[in-house]
Length: 423
Length: 192
Image (cartoon, rainbow over all chains, first blue to last red; front, side):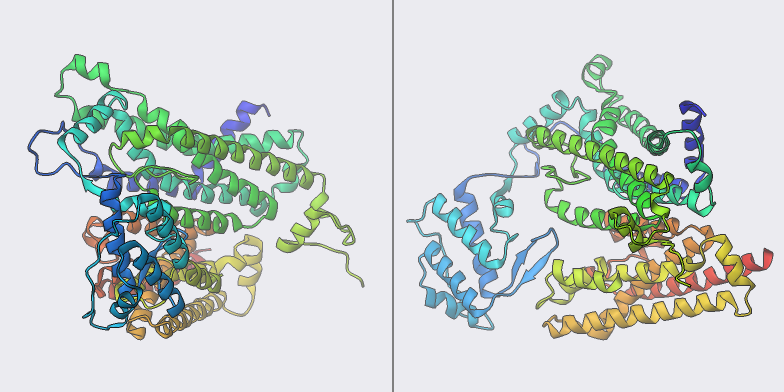
């Protein structure tokens, strides 16, 4: 069978599978119910508006008192908030560590350590002391002390480098809002901002749902006893595995692309009252498609590749568990960079309409992230082809239980190990 | 696997000295997932048609065995959740143990029953895991207000928002789904 015919056959097989239909339904429901309410026209900010939202400043005059006040409140109630692995954690310190924390607070406020400890042990907080930043402390010393406080709490606290900026929260001015609006119009060409929000929502689904499709199709040959028949065919293992993989990817990308086209039209509608010249000069009609390939495709590739690899290797649905756990922990740890920043998430978050500056500042990191994940997916599928080739040559089906190859050891762990009866 | 989920919960979430709302977060977001792990694979041992045909030909009523498996899974799930809640209580969390145990179990049973139903109807284990995970994502993203009239009654994370009413609905819907799964299975078996 030639490659094209094989590809279309695999596409047909993918479309007809129940998990694929469920995947399309879930994707559509999620986009309609979660994303669409967020899609609205971005209006130009006007002077004298009541509010323009908030932003974070790096001004020490703002950050230092806010952080110290927060630390003192947590100290007196001995209840520290931390997100060491992205999950909310409430930390209670023992007496020794509370004393160390009192030392830090004393240094940063100038209030005596004993007085601070006295205020912390009073149940009704009747001895709460007035605290102000010690004028003798500069910002570098303050950062050093916050790092120490974070270490005492166990890391991931509000005083860690990652979260300290949140104490610099201030209201946006009209000028800030206007600059942001201009960025959306000029740098995002309007639709880019919407496409990022779409990528944020669709990424959540694409980081987990494709693995169900890959597992089902991977197990199908085993369930219908087709393995032996396929193993003896002339087609190379690389061809079989990659054609199947690309067929799955293509079919799962198809609904994403269709939704992307539809959303482009929806965004065009928001701005249909703008003058046509202005509209066509600014609007990027292909933004959703670009983001689909650049942002979403690597996520889809990896979650499918994990399914292909682990199902091929073990012949079990273990990939659902592995990808499910990866997705679960990724989702929670991504909460801290919900509005951009990206890091090494499989599904980078950008849960805000706009924030173009953050996107542009982190563009290189995002690009490296996406390339690494795409390469990882190809490597996983290549290894799957090697495993498939080994299976075709009967390496996994040996009756010699004394052979100590790694593949046999893996197989022993998972399924159907056959050995000759001693009898 | 269910025990591993509980151990991971203690590792990733802080469960020392939490108030009622904060304590509900690890229970509803992570501990409730044990239902999927325990209840969905009830039909898995006989997933392959040949094995199923052999098992169904035996004198012992096969679906009776599956019902027994489901009951054991549900009881084990309840016990595990209750033990975990009691452990939280021992760690100085300000929670009514039985109420929170039952509330978490209700969400857990619903997720597991949804998966069991999907698996039972589709005879595809991947779909069985997919549906409860999709519902979980849906709840996580939408919040109670954006779920619509019907699904807001079946909101999974209500205890963290201070509401317990949804738990009765989840418990009821979970039980109905389990019963419906077996009724459908009986009809399918008779029609074969």
